Amino acid sequence: MTQQQPTVILATASYDHTIRFWDAKSGRCYRTIQYLDSQVNRLEITPHKRFIAAAGNPHIRLFDINSNSPQPVMSFDSHTSNVMAVGFQCDGNWMYSGSEDGTVKIWDLRARGCQREYESRAAVNTVVLHPNQTELISGDQNGNIRVWDLNADSCSCELVPEVDTPVRSLTVMWDGSLVVAANNRGTCYVWRLLQGTQTMTNFEPLHKLQAHNGYILKCLLSPEFGEPQRYLATASSDHTVKIWNVDGFTLEKTLTGHSRWVWDCVFSVDGAYLITASSDTTARLWNMSSGQVFRVYQGHHNATTCCALHDGAETSPS
Image (cartoon, rainbow, N blue to C red):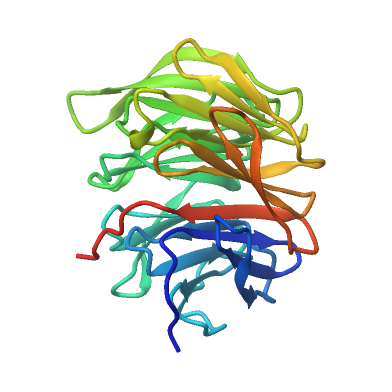
């Protein structure tokens, strides 16, 4: 049985072993999937809005967004520990993941198997795909940042901003000009990305930002359609999310309202809103211009650890 798909897809997952889908405007939960295998560490919606990936321990499950079926349509099973990162290539043809088992994997969604595996030698906490679609950047528990060149099928660059300080989150500017790494000490490292003579991306140190006193659990740069404003959002164990102006990395505003750790955040496609997920069991929708809460999503019975939003135009699968 299929259902009418909302134009804005908002999903959250929690330690209560459920994934919830919400009407973003009204705050009504219209679908709940029981996820009994494990907690869900990360949610990601495919570019064409057809599926949502739930990264758990040690599986990745793909669910049909347009169906009421509680069963996954695909399962990806070769990781051996918590999957902490998941994302999709821009056409939705393949998926990437990173796990505490120390590997980064690429999965072909048409062939339904693991196509490549890269060994990070430490628990992987975060993986992002460069907008050029040919480089993955990973951050791990030992503080290493590595660039995986998919054309050369090898590690092309390695950085250690702070030895033995776990890199919790990475984000890349939509145009590929900046990368930000956030760590367990509340610090963000910012680099300019310079294209080298080959495809290898060179990192030029730009800024070091002491953003929070606690852990930074997620950092995220604003999207293309938010231009000309460029912001960095940092979500922290100190219960706040801070919004930084990328021009000079000055503090624009602090979003306060969550009463426990803020684990995840995602911008709306135009950068006008931010959704956050917290251990206080709620997700919140914030107005970026005012810094005020616009909507609270209540329904989970334990920590809400991740959120996913797709409010942009649907891209057709190739």
